[in-house]
Length: 226
Ligand SMILES: Nc1ncnc2c1ncn2[C@@H]1O[C@H](COP(=O)(O)OP(=O)(O)OP(=O)(O)O)[C@@H](O)[C@H]1O
Ligand SMILES: [Mg+2]
Image (cartoon, rainbow, N blue to C red; front, side, top):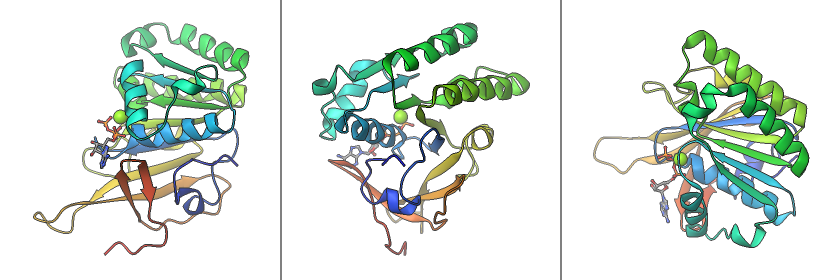
């Protein structure tokens, strides 16, 4: 099991993320997807593991700054981390090359943790039948490399328990929904997460509140929502 590095979360997902699994973390804008992924990487770096962060939206500088803002200093681990900004259109056009490069990068580096933030940007460039194919190929490549991966995705516009295109949940071993819960229009919304899937793991399905603070995400395990 790999710790997520997020306070209170490992207990909710049954101890952590099993090695070699792909877990998709999805939610609306600002729910903390990138922050979640940064914690996962930072935890690896603290353990001396090699990590790859592939970003399809923010550039390397912005990723480093966001991490720093939460007190995660990636610079001191520069030997163990690769932050790669990829242009989603270029990725789509040379999917085979990207997959080969990714596999050899993971192998060469001996990477233990991988993040792809935000996979749904890439998904959006494919039509429905090619989307499934592209994602399952990506999954196969990652499975071959034995790395443990976090994918992030936007959520469906109407259902917070579904990723934007509804495919990543099937392609991944685990899926965690980050949600805004509104008691009423005039009250401040609460953030809460739901583990919708975690293969081979005994996990809770309870909606668990979390906060984003100066040190990142803190899951309020055992707290009542209302
Ligand atoms: N110090 C802080 N205290 C409280 N909330 C914070 C703090 N820093 C960031 N946030 C909140 O966390 C959010 C950023 O989270 P993050 O970038 O991880 O979200 P995201 O789901 O990746 O968003 P996007 O879909 O835009 O990429 C901010 O929009 C803000 O609401
Ligand atoms: Mg983000």
